[in-house]
Image 1 (cartoon, rainbow, N blue to C red):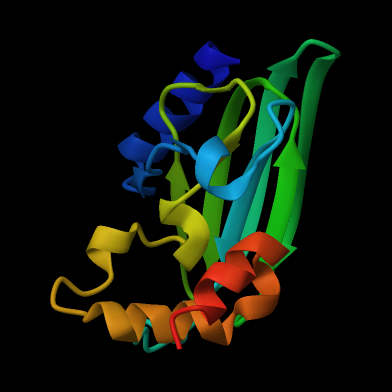
Image 2: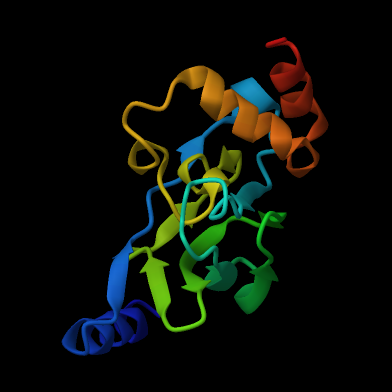
Length: 166
């Protein structure tokens, strides 16, 4: 799997199609009570909210090796929508494609993510943009408004945390 990903990235880079690297996942078991047998992968498509002239539909593709064998699949996330997927522990590669009318931007992890359970993606919660790329001067209150707008996208415990910031 690693070699296939390296070849795909090299091909994209040679054609000028490689858009960027996905940020890493984070261990969040204590704060959100995530089961040690699951990894929560949340993507919220805020491409319209983040000021893009042309919002994008997102296509997420994954490949992984788990204790039960090889897994793969893909799913789409519409504009102003979200998806929370739970992955069993394993070693995964993800590709997130922002599909616009005239171009596609691909973001992927170059090294496998070894999801050992109890992890939640943080930077991908806002779509294809890592938090630190949104707007460097975006006040925390504005970020909180975005999170609240997509309240349905979060698990109940995190919804309660967001609601407590009234």
